[in-house]
Amino acid sequence: MTRITIAKGDGIGPEIMEATLSILEAAGAQLAYDEIEIGEKVYLAGNTAGISPEAWDTIRRNKVFLKAPITTPQGGGYKSLNVSTRKFLGLYANIRPCFSLHPYVATKHPKMDLVIIRENEEDLYAGIEHQQTDEVTQCLKLISRPGCEKIVRYAFEYAKLYGRKKVTCFTKDNIMKQTDGLFREVFNEIAAEYPEIANDHWIIDIGAAKLANAPQDFEVIVTLNLYGDIISDIAAEIAGSVGLAGSANIGEECAMFEAIHGSAPMITGQGIANPSGLLLGAVQMLSHVGQTSIAEKIQNAWLKTIEDGVHTFDIYKEGVSTRRVNTQEFTAAVIANLGQLPKNFPAVSYQQDARITLPKYQRKPQKTKTLQGVDLFVHWSGTDVNDLAKKLKSLPADAYEMILITNRGIKVYPDGFPETFCTDHWRCRFMAKSPELATKTALIALLTAAEAQGIDVVKTENLYAFDGKAAYSLGQGQ
Ligand code: NAD
Image 1 (cartoon, rainbow, N blue to C red):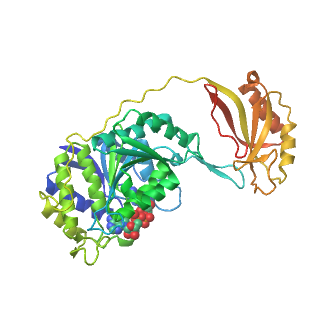
Image 2 (cartoon, rainbow, N blue to C red):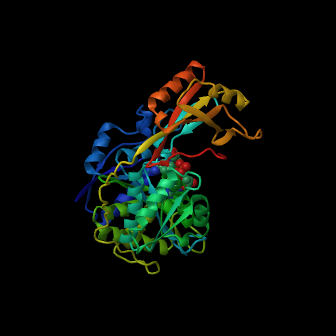
Image 3 (cartoon, rainbow, N blue to C red):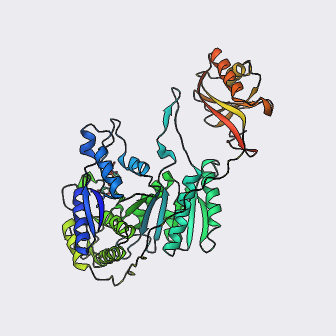
């Protein structure tokens, strides 16, 4: 018997959770439940996290969490519970299988069968944002080597466990050479450890286009958080319906399972929601806790129900479907099919031990880090960049010399184009006049001098080389 935590959530959440639990029970899942309250009611009672400390304790004690969708109220500083759950519990891998159910569910892609493995903790979802000037805001994109290693290794281990032949990486490393560049570098390193699995890389924009047009060409896709978020909804939608996809969020200790869709307020209370997304999340959960034969039994009964043409409204199609059913009727049909195999779809069969355990991250030896300069980000409302350059050049700074100004990344000094549109946010690059002068003390002196001249420095970023290799972007056009 495995004790898990469940939350019925908001909107259609309670309806699809009830359906899912009755199928789990009928299939003989060995589960005991602790129910917690999360979501809208908790938010509106004044808890901006949407979850109480006691509920956290329950989740951490049981380690396995089956969660229905919740509604995050707009505005009011409410924190996304989905994002905080993933991050607090270290659920670094988000796994979303997306497969078509041709010819029973309408899709333009009859042969689609892929899994998206999305990094779940880093990237722009760190939510570290600032307004720096009247005109400019920023969001920090943080990508770590351990974060990349864990997710990429997970993807290859997943491919190995489930007999997938290829892992594809999506990044935008042609533009983001440091952050996405690190992800791709780690992908190349780890791919080399799995010679039996093919690998390739696509720039995310053309990769997403190809995914939308020819999803059958992909098997396992591993990517960064934001890209993964976007492409997994695209993939679920083109497979048939967002109402059909479940997802697993896996960490070293804990795991959370859910549907990929939201609380669907438009159809709440009508009893017509498709419970398949949460049910397939629960199937992933059963295989995670080692109840693989129950997982198989449920998924096969569900496949049989779909091929019997017993369909909820979101996938119902005249001429293909045989019965248009509500949530309860769909649930009853799946239960009636327990123990049967689909006739047309291949029956699923899960490995006995479907849990992927990765080796602990080994920190690499530290590289030699040398300070080479500093970027001062300046709030300045003037229009002629030469005026700003003159001010910065005349600072009494012995160690550093101003060599470049960019505005939103594009070089505007020296030799900028008058056509370039400029905001009030300027990145002013100072390089050390010689390596021995590059100290933090000299940097503080530079800042003090800038302050004395009334220059409004809103942020500084040190420029380092690691093992002699400059580890910062050049200005566009530099
Ligand atoms: P949504 O996924 O709730 O709905 C998108 C569309 O899909 C709607 O037309 C809806 O009716 C339909 N749909 C969704 N689930 C369905 C199902 N099971 N059966 C049939 N049709 C289904 O997305 P939204 O409208 O953008 O968001 C509604 C709320 O859900 C928001 O408050 C949002 O914050 C929240 N949300 C929560 C989660 C989560 O808890 N994991 C995820 C996404 C959105």
